[in-house]
Length: 183
Image (cartoon, rainbow, N blue to C red; front, side, top):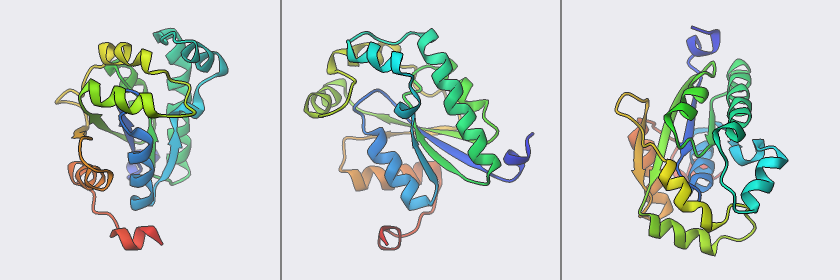
């Protein structure tokens, strides 16, 4: 066990297909919990972004170095004494296994909803390289959290604040009240 794990450092990976609300939920959780935040999309190499922008799904070879970068960032944050929240699709168990290799407790928050709801959100989203046309490939690849994986599932059909409250409760966190976190 690493020093970071012994020191109680942890990361919450907010996961799910594109358009499910990972960034919104993760940023809110990080703020409420006082954790460092990272957007996994920022770790993608240019070639991955170009591929997705062209409507071509990533394969495991494309994802491997990206996941390793995220894992290494999580380890660096833990070694520096920071808890983290990161967005990452983490669609397959083997991808989550890479992230679990970080020197911190890695927990997953899987955001779930009907594909039709997510497709509607993606069609309205502006300025993102992930086209709605790739959503079906993400749902096809999705392996939901296993009962033996450290994490929780939360439906995103409710308003954002309700999703945040449910997420905190599902993960067993007691966060600062909204008024304190907002300041």
